Amino acid sequence: MRAFVLHHQILALWLGVLLINVSVIGAVLWWAVRKGQFSDQDHARYLALEAGIPKEPRKGKHDSASKTDKKEDECSS
Image 1 (cartoon, rainbow, N blue to C red):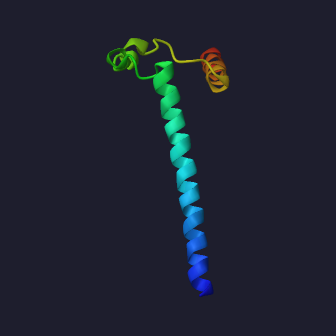
Image 2 (cartoon, rainbow, N blue to C red; image 1 turned 135 degrees about the vertical axis):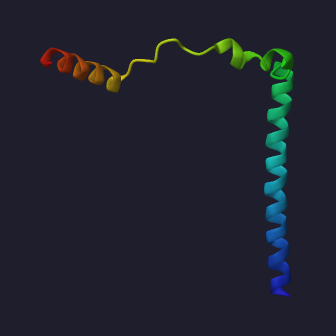
């Protein structure tokens, strides 16, 4: 009898977790629709193409060190 009650408690716990998750997901979707997150789907497919490819690579710590090494190599030869 105790195992039967324990299984029902676990089932009730999982159902509670499920209801909370469904409620949170529903609230997030409701918020997104109300704020217009899904309103312009035709424009969204072209955003990646509008960004383009940068012509020069971004400069970072490693880029400046490699340029310094190249300058030293040019001076020594």
